[in-house]
Length: 476
Image (cartoon, rainbow, N blue to C red; front, top):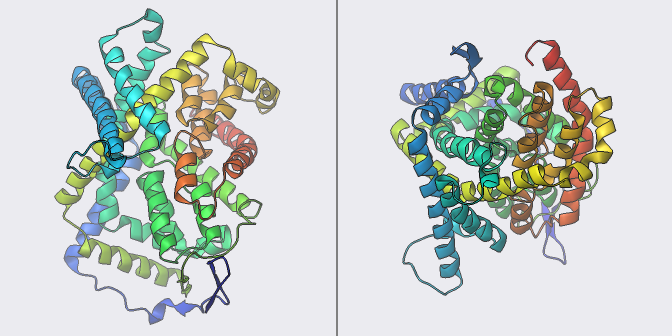
């Protein structure tokens, strides 16, 4: 039962009663659907998480594939990066002109529409790409620590990692993996994060896809009345995580892809701990539990662990039965990955190049991070004068902290690798997207800045402890 307020929002008068899983009609465990789900789940786990020996070190198949492509075909990867960045800038420009009624293309380019800021960044990336590819301009633009690193390492890695990762991620999602893991997570969502169980699916969409996918899923569920404003605020600021693929990019940038499973595990712990704390503090806890339409709250389920596993398997098999073929999912994942790469690679080049040039040629980040140097040093993290600026500049762009520590001590690189992907809120993408998509919550600029600061205060000592533990295990 719900009531509508004078401001048009809806509020629940009472929570729905719990149901037993034993009363739910489960999907039939058709052999073909079970095989599709099992194979997709195994392939996803193998590709991203299974440690294997390779060229004298232990790494994951994800790293092997990416390294082989970029190492064997560097010239082809360079041409591909140039083409996709220029294509992204041109497509965004045409989409914006079409949207403003200044030019009609006859094609659906809505996927490339953007804010003015990101339009400008994509165009700037399209201008810079030929310069970097042909090594035009002054020598300082192409040094190994600035343009040479950005173009030959980061752009190449991102350009390959996202489409390759998208193939396996899409197969995993479309053939039941998301439903299986998400359903198993439901019993912990309410007590730990004060969220309905279905929020696990949105969160996992970010983990295995991207934060943009997770935010769009959240928006759609919100509009159906399945989430309150507080639910949305919590998910958008605590669970709009960077994807598995992006964690791989960070690890590769810092030459730590062999430690990808460790970095990802630390990232997971950090996101869980910070979310569990922040949902109980303002501004998250003071966001109203109101809905923008008739509420459809989730019915809580009760059951034994075994019943939950059967329920999760049933949901996964049902999804696999409805899902497309392996080949169809892989093809669509690759196309989506290429499209996403065209949207972000130019921005990464523009923002990352500016960050590396500022870092190499000005004292900006040193001045900003100076007050944190004693704190980082007291926590026993090496190179505190380098790590301290990296600790605070993540609010601008997730990659900036990573770029600042590429030559630092392994402990410092590990610390920043985990911190950069765990801070979540950065204003090159997540911040503006969240404020634009959820203006009716509302998500405000000052709230995001405050949450970034709060996250950082929690994360710095937590990650320092994890870093010392990993070092003590002989991994750093």
